Image 1 (tube, helix red, strand yellow):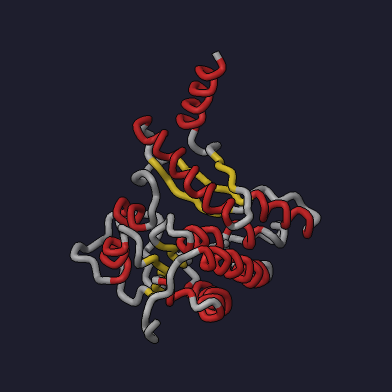
Image 2 (cartoon, helix red, strand yellow):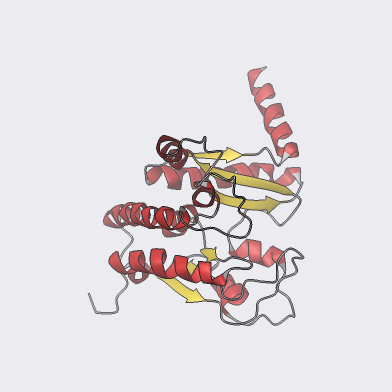
Length: 252
């Protein structure tokens, strides 16, 4: 193998991913348990940021080849993002030589406003991307190169991030139940959830089956890393009603 040859993503790589995720989650958890952002309330339990601002789930999905990229960003605290990348991500990438398997890490250094009215854009964020992904070209177009229009459409952002449907009023969350167990065993307060992935989606019944298939793929990826993934549809009532109707039909 030449010095610059890409390493294969074989059976040995599966164990590399598992070990890398465990180390990243440990580093990330330790950092976030001491991090306080402007949204925190003094009454919040100490695990809140470690449960809600974590990236290890998305990193796992990228390393398993089911997600095109993970976007490390914070709308008003770029120092936090840089600290996360330098203290938690880069040491893990280096220890396991992950970039040599066809992954790419790069900071977004150009202005990147989007059509969103919620935030000012993703400049100063970081992208960890899978160069084997069919959306690698789109990831570069959306995040890593100045966009040809004044603002990047949020629909393109979602597509580049691997979300299954376009942006919309409803929210889906994938919850890591294994990490929830850890939080509850190590903190006195009950942990509400640990976000592995969160995205918005439209109210279109044509996409409901696609959403569940997407969840199935991500659930398998999480299970391969020794973790249990659940789906939270509580913020998507039409999908919940559709699932209930399908279950009733099967039961009849």
